[in-house]
Length: 430
Image (cartoon, rainbow, N blue to C red; front, side, top):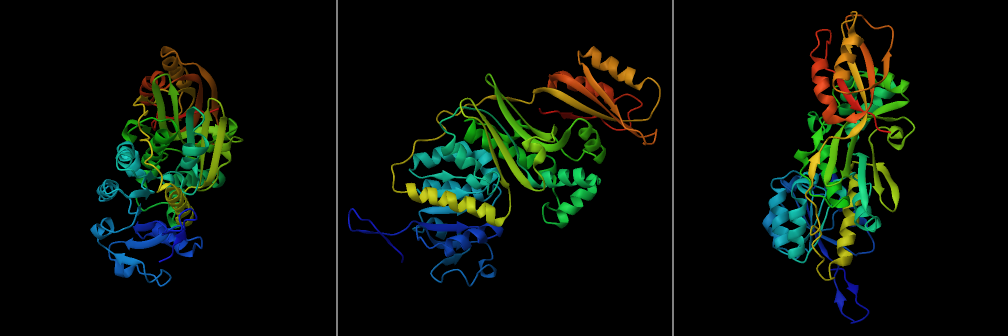
């Protein structure tokens, strides 16, 4: 067994033992890093996975125990458990049992932390151990550690980000190639950027879970993902990028959360952003997170949001953080000052409204009458030539108004007989 020396006592102190549960893409990359490290500050002792015989690798040291038995890992002398099986079951039970046993836990499980993070942090504090989840948002981009350490002296007022690489890849491909959404999705699936069923990505479920975690870590707010409105990107068409370009904008899936008094404004969905802005310049499957602080101003984090190696780096970084503190006094419970705000999607922004209509006289007048009745002001009207009169796309942009003020008008306009598709309504973020 490798050991370190304690120069103050002359005793031999062994490095913390690490049990790895889950040996998929990320788990394998984590094991590779731990096995190749030379500083011996961590020792991998257990790898746990279903059908473990199929998973064994010759590069893993012979003294590492391979098992498919969770209980043997929980009963072992490992001080740190790395949970990389994902999902809520059996991951939640495993993490709870590990924390109750006094084992620190490192996880990349966004669904687990989004739904149970505050109570698991409290459980860790009660049992004198640690729970770290830096890899659960933005993969290899060290956003959560930065919120925990680098920005903890500031008072953050808002967080916004491109948190889902699949959506960003699809939208940036539609932008650059002007291809239909369906074709961009097929390409993303062929390249391994999207699952066969990509609903969790496309409809915002993945991003809102990550936004919930960012609100917990950065805004000290307890927010259930289900309280955050998520809008799909499926309704975005190539023509929307043509109109967005006329407005010097592009379209990205943006996750945002801002405090307005005691209310947390939060939502996930496609939005127009200036083409020259940090969000507008992010291409392919990269992630970007922007924080806005009362004292420190705006800070940006950009990098690969997924993939085995980048995510494994975040996991091992958390492991090193835990190892450095494993002999220290139990840390204070980090959820003691968590707010439980009312969550609303009632942002006030300018808006982009794209209609598909069967051309006839009086269309603009009919739409303008509804907008006027709801106290909504038109900023511009855009119509590109060359489309079939039976399926004509055109755009109205509105001056800033609240979401709650706009959507009753949208329902009335979409019901007009000349509208061939529901109106696409996107906020314009400046």
